[in-house]
Image (tube, rainbow, N blue to C red):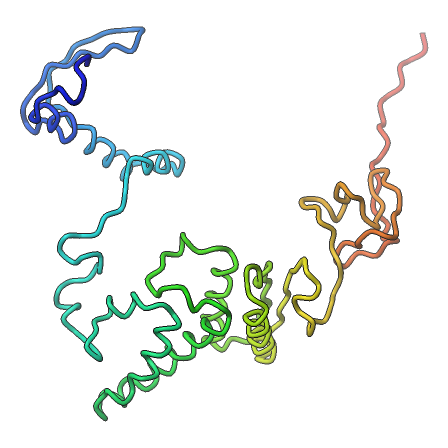
Length: 285
């Protein structure tokens, strides 16, 4: 096609974008190696991209096709993703979609003020539900997530935010005997919120669980029971040491007592050494 897009008639543009329907169109293919002509209905660029996005099993292809997509609100429900019948049910003058637009800090206040607005029968039905909601919202507020809205999508959350949200569900479940490993959950937190997070982790421990927190700043958790120090390297640092060296010995590295010791490994741990090559000796001529 040599005609600029702006010079094409609207009907031609619509056929290119949305297809020709049942009308057959003569098309000529030329990929630089071979040429051929055919006459058949044209699928259209947008239906083609949509079909390939739905049919593919490749995450890479799906990600590439998503470059040509954008999210938009449904014209019927306005992005609520619920039927009109569900949106017609309101508590305190708001439906469930309107409540999820609250930030967590606002939601805490709204749910606490909801009880007096309920009838005695409604209060009896909702008592256990509201108790669970208030506990989880209170936890999220205590760990510095009061700015998040309830309808925030999980893909937009940072690692620390995701960890703290999962902790909220764990505390509500009342499980015991569980090992929790948290990777820098305090990152980005104000010191005040960090203290509140620490109290929550202590509560999780007191329920009968083990909480292992990985932090680079030793002052972040002053009440911790230290279990060891780990170097800054990744991968096989426990065996080979990171680029700054560590206190263990392996693959010819010299002992450096002033370096951090990998977690749970003594400076004198007997690392296995690489076996010498055992090539057969050539027979004497």
